[in-house]
Length: 467
Image (cartoon, rainbow, N blue to C red; front, side, top):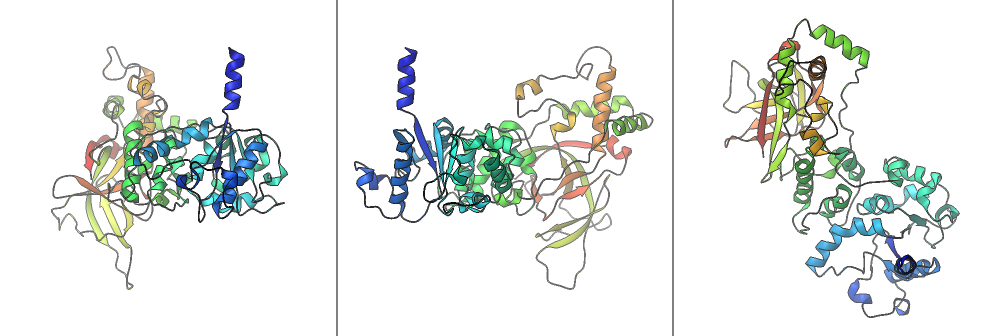
């Protein structure tokens, strides 16, 4: 029986092609019920014929290429195909990557310079496969590497790491899912697609999501739906960490994938010796019971979306003054000096014109600087790995359990207080007439810090609705 299974699996092994779409690619209706080798060798037909010939020479009988193996006139088939494409590349026996702009006998770095490395759909096409080979424009192996799997070539993987910004180990052994969402969005931030919605659709498989494909919805809506799903499913708010222009889908999301190109703000590193010293200094100024109470209030908070509105747990600081810095030149961006209760004064640069006010000249509209709540500050297990394990996790002796508070609980709570006193990346929110808030986008991270431990004492933990 095993022998029969092996023979069947060997016979039906399929090769997939990753390539850059060019002019006059053959579609399904161009090849259906025809012999590929008998087609007129013009345009993309030459590439199709060469792909089939190369696959056959490698002893494969079946091949799949996205140009002519999907009925793009059938919405149901297109929907299923785009959502399944990552899995198809994943389960293929081999993925051939055709570099049409890399000539024979090319030297290292030709792969990095190829236009194939600029396209959106090629990201899942090189991450998903377990076995991959790169071919030059004459269908000879890149760098004359005839090994069966270029993912095992240190030279080629290091070049691909250089070209993509993805480390070689991830390139060779990628697993789809929500973990490190912000980093995965960065991978796609410099990519381009012919159809604007594809910049989002091409990432469905990377995040392991299945969403409707609706060409014509526009890029902001497609990207917004994907980001909404990431936050809703994982609770990971790193997708909210961007600079640029707000999306029409939701103001807490970016209008364009390029907003993820800049690396996110990184919390200051605190060594364990520094942490213990800071905890010791806090014990004289802050009661452990207050720290535990704050820890308990933050423990189970999690961001979620409902009807395109983000419900964001955060620590809110009321803005008390906004003043625009004068300039002699016409500006695209405006710089404002901002003050908020409990925070150091700061400057914010934005495309939006803000109302100017102070305590002596208040306005009806309310503004907040908020610290979006990030569960990683609790130093719990990774919620993107195992949501249930986090929801079930209770600190020994933490509020809600019977019995006295133990040293371990106190330690966790005081570590949180230390981290809340460090600089952080804030959002500026403006309340709308209907009660919800809108994020005011900035051209750079808004970095601020609480003024002292007294500000930590009175932190206002809220869940705000943001449209």
